[in-house]
Every structure is written in structure tokens, then in C-alpha cells.
Length: 504
Image 1 (cartoon, rainbow, N blue to C red):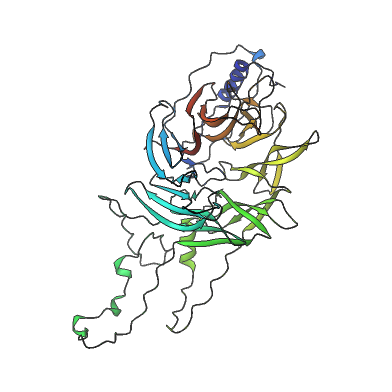
Image 2: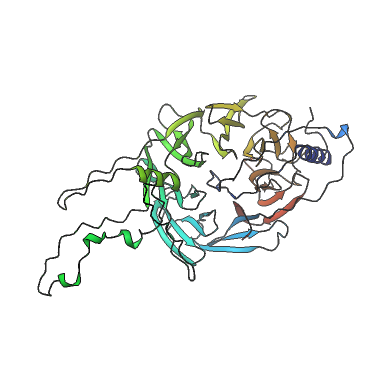
């Protein structure tokens, strides 16, 4: 087995040859990463799994390191400042030419949690108002329309620690809320106003045969607002002295775009963490960190969680009877519970990432190694409802970081702390078995994986200059190519990667 004692050029050449032999070609599809979770665009087809062959440089002549592969995708990242945060879009081929996406003002010292919609039309962000003392329940959700250059307050009292998560069609948004001793997940229907010069998408013509009700974002078409038999001719208007109005069917109240879909007492569930959407087009996967005596972390699912699923449910629903004006409405039913899938750990797990095929979840959990608690990578098979530790043979001891899936679906990128003789490089571990390869090591500190480009050409990492979790030092964003190149993208302040997007 090849060890970390190999030279850096040797490891780079071995990794490049493995990737070349494997024929890595990932589907070029929009992917949105949300740091705890993802709510990104769905790939149009499944990327072929990789066949990994790990070789030693001693087995063959080492070829020269080729230039990094070109990619049409742009990386979007957030630069935090004292009173404003900037969102930038950058082409890896020209990293010094940043394209400004938005500037978000915020309270001094309280950076925002921002999420760009998959269609690049809107930015949802959470900020805390003046006078707030706890961002976990005093955050305010705003929606910035980049076409109209307008920002609206959507909801108060949300959790700043969870980045808003979009569905792939940009029609729904999920945020977390803490209220008293309850933890909740809110589902928000995104209703957009037309920008100047923009035309509305025409509604489909009604079919004479029964069909599913199409998803409608705003108001119903004019022909459906008042049936023809209920209109009133001009001769039936009343003179000014008459105060009574003719009886008519009450106009239904507009639908509230904000809906609580999950709710639990903190005695049983400390928090929910949405992590992405299933391949059925209807369900959302989420983490439940359990409270009480049971403890631990489990993964569950909830449906309907997409616009398509909501439209199908609405089409099947039986219309509620119209109540007399003097009769109070029925009580609002308590939100449904999530469906348990599998327990991930008896402790609090972290750093979850959903696989490209939506069938597996990677995460970190604690283990005892040589009498010390360390973080180790695991995967969960969501169909088989099993968990499996990821082999760390050939990786340095100590904590490991952020296991994220390569777009091909059969490799995990895992970060490690530096050793006494070498900086902490990102390992690429075949989940089906076999020794790891390594991306090029930084000249300082250690790398933590953040987000793959959808075509697998580059990995965005957060590089820390320190040597331990107690001394992480300064940070920057680097782009690392499996072919051996490293591009320093941004440094000097606090940054967070929002995700990779197609060119505008």
C-alpha cells in the first residue's frame, strides 16, 4: 500500500494517473452547496461510477503534470465584512476578475447567512436586527430579487446558524426556527414579482379531461376567480343610500406562503438539519439530533417537500366545505413527523453531504482511537438503512474533516490535520475499497474540502494556516485540481463558498 511518505510529485502523479485511467467525466449540472446541507439542482442523468486503480510512482514513468482542466462553471463565494458582506462570482480561469453579485448590509459584527437560488435569480439571507442578542432565534429572513434589485423581509424569528436551503427549481425555500422549547422547519413558497420588461409565463389551457392541478406561484387566472354565474349585471347595482351588500360566496383568504412542516419539542429533538432531496422528486432528507435520554443523531425523510409533490397533493385533496361566517375555523393540525430511516451515531454527528445519486449520506462521527476521541468519516446507505465506516488506512492520525462526494459518486474527499513533516492534503478515498490518492498539498497548514465543481475538474477548499483545531490560524479559499494545480482564490478576511453555478 502506498503511504503518505511518498513525495508530493509522486502522489500527484499517482492520483492523476488513477483519475485518467478511471475516466472521470462528471455530469455538468448545477449544484448548490449549503454548508450543512444542500438544496441544489438535480442532475439530469446519473454520472457513471468511477473505477479506481491506485498505483505507485515506482511502477511506471511519471508523466509531466498537465495544466488544470478548463471548466465553464463559476464559483460563488461570500466575503464577510464588518457592516456588509459581498457575494462574488468568479471564473477559475481568471480568478482575479471577480464579478459582483450582491452587497448585503448587516448589523456591525454579525455576518449574514446567504444562499443563491439555483436559477441565480434571488438571494435568500438571514440577518439579525439591532438589539438582538441571540442569532439562534432572532434572525430575520430577507429575499433579494437580483433582477428587480429589491429586497423584502419574509419572516422574523429564524435561526441564523442554518443557511437557507432551496429546492432545485427555486420555487421553495427551507429555514429553521426555534420558538420557546420547540424546534421547527419552515417551508416558504417563493412568489416573485415581474421585473421591468419581463413577461409572465402563460398558464396552460384547461383540459376537458380531469388532470392534476398545475403548480401556480401567484394568483389564479382571471377566469377562475369568480364563476360566471356569480357575476352581477350593471342594473343590479344599489343606490347610495342602501348599505347592505348582496350575498355572495366568500372570497377565500390568500394562501400563507410560510408553512411549518416539521415541529418537535426540544426534549425529544434538539434540532432539525435539512441536507437535501431524495431521487423520488418528492421527499427531503433531514438530520434529527435527538434530545432526552436516547440521544444520538439519525436521518429521516419528509414529504411533500417539492413544488411537484405539493401540486400532486393539492390535485388529490378533497375541497374543504365552506363554513358559515359565524362558525370558527377548525384548529390547525400539528405538523407531520419525519419518517425515520437510520441512526447515524449515538453522539452528535456533523458535516453531512448527500451523494450525487441521492442514495447515500457521508458524515463525521466520533471514535475512540488510542484513548482519544477523534472525528472519522462514515457513509449511510439510505435504501439499505445501514452505516459503514470509511477506511482511513493511509491517512494521518488525528481528526478528519468534511467528507464530501466527488460528482462521480464513488470517491470521498476527506481533509486531515498536518503532520510534523507534511501539510494536511485532501485525500480521495474510494468508497468501494482501495487505498487513497491525495490532491496537491498546500504550502502551509491544512485543507478542508468545501465544494466540487459539478464536472469534477476542481475542488474548492478552505485552507487554514494553523496546525490544529486549537490553532487554525488564518483562512483562504483555494481551488485544487486533481491534475496537481492550486489556485489561490481569495484571502485576507473571512470567506464562505456558496456553490458552483453555470455561466450567467
